[in-house]
Length: 109
Image (cartoon, rainbow, N blue to C red; front, side, top):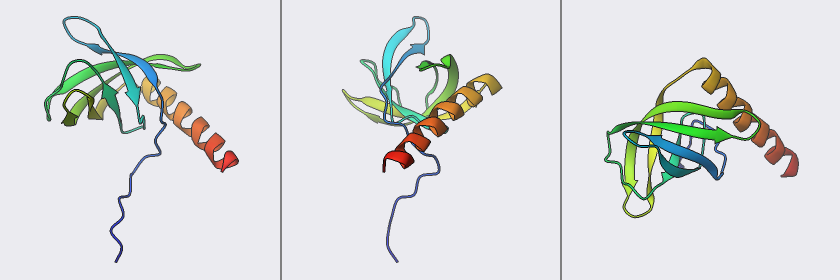
């Protein structure tokens, strides 16, 4: 049996502009975005298991806010998060972006 990693969600490479919301809004770049999570490049690290809020700018859909849990950290590079909470508006906007990009990728490939 072949050992292949299977991901639950289609991923969009990015980059997308965003902010990590806390005491201050810290600019971040979002990569590998899916309906389930993303990778965040940031000057500030996040510990695995940490809960944080991101604001992400989606093309044509505008800004969405999501809450997530840090899965792992790549020191001096960024961290991956799994989305845990988002509004229906954010879920619909994120789904629209991902599905639009997936259709374009399938057409091209």
